[in-house]
Amino acid sequence: MNHFRLFKDVPRIFDAWDIDSNYTEQEITAAEDVHCEIEETGGFRAVLRVSGRIAHSVFTQRIILEAQSERILFETQIDWQELHWLLKVSFPVNVYATEGINEMQFGCVRRPTMRSTQYEKDRFEVCNHRYSALFDESHGAAVLNDCKYGISMNGNALELTLLRAAVTTTIRTPFAHRAWSCDLRENKEEELTVSDGEVRLLFGAFEIRTVRLA
Image (cartoon, rainbow, N blue to C red; front, side, top):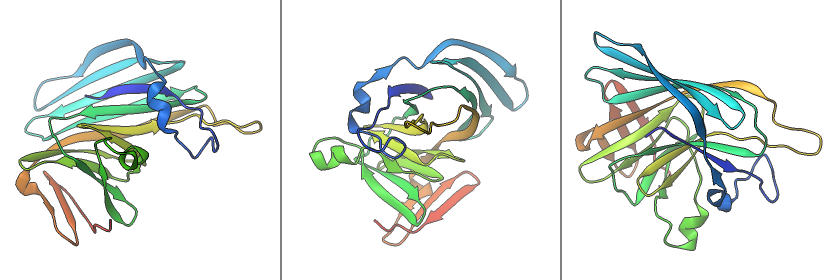
């Protein structure tokens, strides 16, 4: 859970737009020099602070747990200093689904979680706005976020695309401080319904309704 993954990212054509399918063959160790400490405890809330290094970039993360909550919140900051690297975070869950639901700007789409055929392999990355979810006949899980727009789903893992580092002969992605929040939520069968016209996701007090177009 919350596993950072770092890949070499050198697309063959459009540096800032494309992610080539062979990026998974060029993975290196992501988080190193990791230190964990309890930042807050007691009452109905606990916060674990994690700090470390990803390649040349220093990161800090707060993992927040609240009593009787169905979510784990991850607040992350990083001083991104990379070129031609792709950073993802993986959330393996105990849900086995052949398709995932991904919110997009006009509703949501379904994409395969398996890589059996070439057609499925070609759809390895999908757009993602507020959430992506996996569910089976009994339960499900979703990753919600506030500012990231791409995700891959491989088997039972939701892998949110966090940062890239494109460069051309005249322009490169600026080194900068980046911050984002995401949370992992579980849900029961009765809290997720899919009909011909609408997907309804209910995670505690958080409810999303989107029209399913494809």
